[in-house]
Image (cartoon, rainbow, N blue to C red; front, side, top):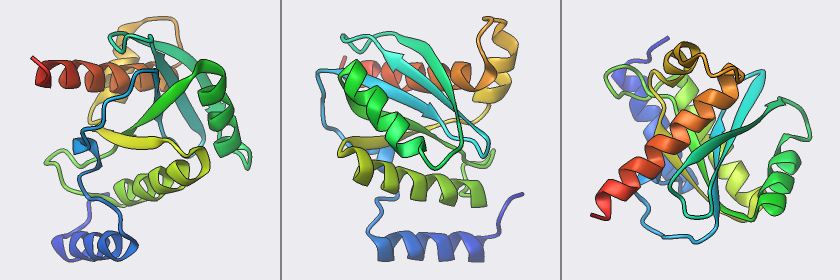
Length: 161
């Protein structure tokens, strides 16, 4: 469901009030460890991980939505020595914010607080469709997380050329 401009303005005002950066994906802090990719869903959370050179993304796991979700993600970050997290940002097809976008923004803020890591966003439009088409043998959610993370790595790599 798309939201109108009035609702979009309200979401932007709420984000400003909370001190949430509306362009989270543009933060330019380089890291040296692995990067965790997250595809946020209401039931399942897809997880992917990069190599330590931050060139390639790999599927990792699918977590169930639960009261332990943040602690589970924090544990994975510690075990894998990840020092940054990339979360898929669901935008409308024209790039507008939706109700789901707002949910993910709040998730990102909470994840930053719990993990103490920088959490950035990456446009996730059509990644679930793409994940369904890959036939990789992995679950759709973790494959979508891999695609989101790989897009981020590729885009960041292109910006460094």
